[in-house]
Structures are given as structure tokens and as C-alpha cells.
Image (cartoon, rainbow, N blue to C red; front, side, top):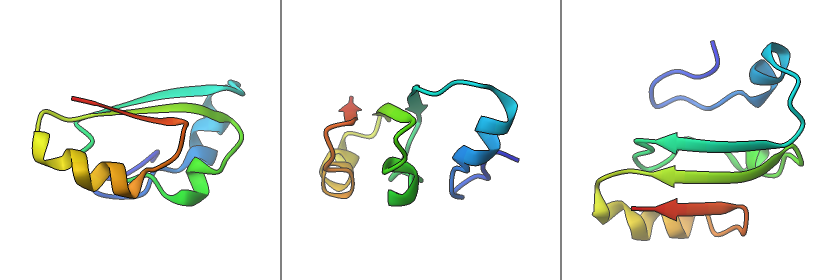
Length: 74
């Protein structure tokens, strides 16, 4: 399983399924986010875009993911 609801995303499981070295990931309906710093520091993730319709999450997500490779769209 790649990830469970409210669980941690397992990039290594994805890499076993496909042979992409430069991931650009869209997390649609991200909530408060499930991405660990371990995965964000992985050099194969080039960009992570988080999207959720709940505008109140913007401040939480911006504090949690203050890296250049993470973009938060609402």
C-alpha cells in the first residue's frame, strides 16, 4: 500500500512501481498534510503541490511546509 488515510506516504513503495526520478506530486484534498520531512528531503521529489478547499488550513500548511519545493494552492 502506498499510503493509508491519515497515514504517511511511502515514496519507496511508489519507486518500486514506476521508474521516475523527478517526482512532481499533487496532493489533492491534502487536509493538514501527510508528508514527512524524510520524504520532502528526498532528492527525487522536485515539487509538491498541496490543494484543499478548506481555506483555514493555509496557515497550518505554510508553517508545516516552509520549503521552496512545496507550493500551496487554494
